[in-house]
Amino acid sequence: MRPVRFVLFPFLLLSYLHFLVTCLNVPGTRMGQTSALVGTKLYFFGGSSATTNATLNVGLNYSNEVWYLDLSNSSLFNTAIPTWYKDAEMPIANFFDTSCVSPTNNSAIFIFGGRQLLPNSSIISYNSPVYRFDPNNNSIWSIPNITGFNSTFITRNLMKAVIDNTRRVFIFGGTSFKVNNSDTSPVMHYNDMNILDLTNMTWSTLVIPQAPPYYSYAATILPTGLIVYIGGLDYFSDASQVNMSEIRIFNTTSFIWSSKPVNGSSIESRIGHSAVLGQNNDIIIYGGSKYNADVGPYGPQAFPNLVVLNTNSWTWSIPDIPPTNTPQPLSFHSAALYKNYMIVAFGLVASSSGYYNKNLYVLDTQKYVWIAINNTATTTKGSTSQKTQTNKAQGTSNSSPNNGLFIGVGVVSCIVFIGMASFGIFLFFKGRNRNYKK
Ligand SMILES: *[C@@H]1O[C@H](CO)[C@@H](O)[C@H](O)[C@H]1NC(C)=O
Ligand SMILES: *[C@@H]1O[C@H](CO)[C@@H](O)[C@H](O)[C@H]1NC(C)=O
Ligand SMILES: *[C@@H]1O[C@H](CO)[C@@H](O)[C@H](O)[C@H]1NC(C)=O
Ligand SMILES: *[C@@H]1O[C@H](CO)[C@@H](O)[C@H](O)[C@H]1NC(C)=O
Ligand SMILES: *[C@@H]1O[C@H](CO)[C@@H](O)[C@H](O)[C@H]1NC(C)=O
Ligand SMILES: *[C@@H]1O[C@H](CO)[C@@H](O)[C@H](O)[C@H]1NC(C)=O
Ligand SMILES: *[C@@H]1O[C@H](CO)[C@@H](O)[C@H](O)[C@H]1NC(C)=O
Ligand SMILES: *[C@@H]1O[C@H](CO)[C@@H](O)[C@H](O)[C@H]1NC(C)=O
Ligand SMILES: *[C@@H]1O[C@H](CO)[C@@H](O)[C@H](O)[C@H]1NC(C)=O
Ligand SMILES: *[C@@H]1O[C@H](CO)[C@@H](O)[C@H](O)[C@H]1NC(C)=O
Ligand SMILES: *[C@@H]1O[C@H](CO)[C@@H](O)[C@H](O)[C@H]1NC(C)=O
Ligand SMILES: CC(=O)N[C@H]1CO[C@H](CO)[C@@H](O)[C@@H]1O
Image 1 (cartoon, rainbow, N blue to C red):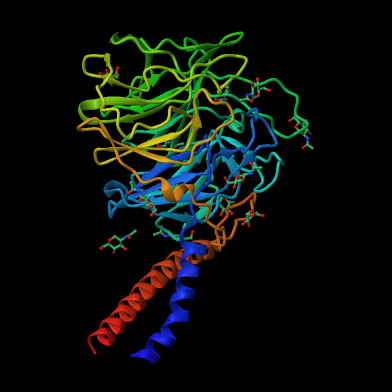
Image 2 (image 1 turned 180 degrees about the horizontal axis):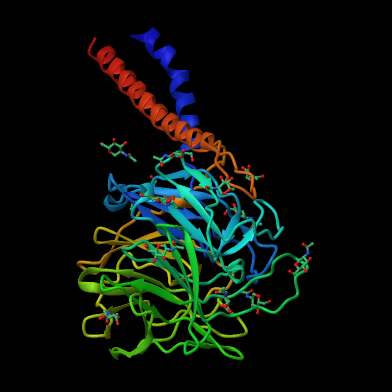
């Protein structure tokens, strides 16, 4: 046995080095990313990170990274260390964008708007306001051809897209951003509903005069086809926080916008909060910060951190959650519902300006308890040797099937190496035992 072990040892060492270098690669801090759940995979696109106190303007560290968690093996839910996978990078670095998943078309993810930079640069660049990512087709990034696109949407950010069951995407309002570094035009605030019909890729813009320009809200579509808009900022001559007891509703059949008074618990106004649709059409709101013109999004935490809107009775309630595994107060994070689990990720730590989060938090929305997540590994700085190729931003369709294949190979090689290493260890100890028995 001794010669076998002798041969195995360097291999074991190499396997583990490969594992440490390639496989423990984890995403850094970020905020303003968009996330999308496709099957059991929860994707995170871009975001902005800064190691210093920064204002949310140009010259920041925007990311074009794509990371995902595979929730199928529940590694998240048994206190194991979450495993991160890296996928084909976005053609642009982007944050404050929004996304939705097509129920058909092989679950393509469409990404809308956001503040865009060329990757690894501070060069503002708007090649396309809409990108398509095909997670189930070699992770191909492409720019869809859209009929009737409204060019005022190009630099739109701080809005939320929802998709209905007829494959229409609805995006209300938002703000504009600089077209390039020498653009000194004023920031615009919009009160239009932009609708993209994915069945024929047709865009239409519905201007709603009775609605104020509105952004940094949370939007959720109910099975009845009503879109529920919560919190955020109105803009008349200045930004003003929207009262949480005044819920705005858009009927996707009649295209009528209305306001609904909400009773129950008193909830502080907020921006940068998340919303997921839980059981019984409850909307679960997490996080957000109080807006203040001086500090912008770096405002203090809005209370309470987690609130629930019952959309049958239109009342707010504050669930009684045990004070264990409680997340940091976050804003401009993302939240997604997988089965009964609400997965909260990244974001700004509210009330601590300039501090960004990289941890994950998981709420069991049936029992209303935060479950234990081992975020230890996410504080381990992994070397970024994973060989991901960056797409070149192009004006036309941007198909690069090699990207996805390459990542695929990377992930498979990780798994193969872990497998081989484990097998090696198995043989190693098997050999030891035998020697011991002898
Ligand atoms: C930019 O973001 C990356 C990834 O989050 C991070 O590792 C790096 O430190 C950031 N750089 C700066 C200057 O903030
Ligand atoms: C989605 O699939 C339908 C057919 O099911 C096709 O007509 C349509 O063009 C596709 N849309 C996109 C964006 O690929
Ligand atoms: C951006 O920087 C990362 C990390 O240094 C690198 O892996 C990637 O290839 C760069 N992308 C581009 C388009 O230069
Ligand atoms: C995958 O992408 C390629 C290239 O864009 C396309 O030709 C093919 O139809 C796609 N396959 C599926 C199943 O969508
Ligand atoms: C968009 O249209 C152009 C010109 O008709 C075509 O070359 C390109 O392949 C199309 N892109 C997609 C994603 O269909
Ligand atoms: C920057 O944007 C402004 C406003 O749209 C435009 O007038 C100017 O030509 C642009 N400059 C460059 C260098 O693209
Ligand atoms: C796109 O499809 C929708 C729904 O089928 C339809 O109402 C709309 O008229 C179509 N648009 C065009 C330009 O064909
Ligand atoms: C495009 O959007 C702008 C801003 O909401 C609006 O004023 C304009 O009417 C829209 N154009 C079309 C053709 O819908
Ligand atoms: C939406 O509007 C349509 C048409 O006016 C109406 O029939 C429907 O009841 C409304 N939906 C809800 C949930 O109120
Ligand atoms: C961050 O910068 C802003 C603007 O310069 C300043 O008002 C704020 O106090 C700073 N925060 C911290 C924690 O340094
Ligand atoms: C989390 O993972 C680290 C690294 O493997 C381990 O040292 C630590 O004990 C784990 N913590 C918990 C609470 O399981
Ligand atoms: C991400 C991951 O580990 N996925 C695995 C989950 O379990 C199935 C079946 O055991 C495997 O096929 C996947 O590779």
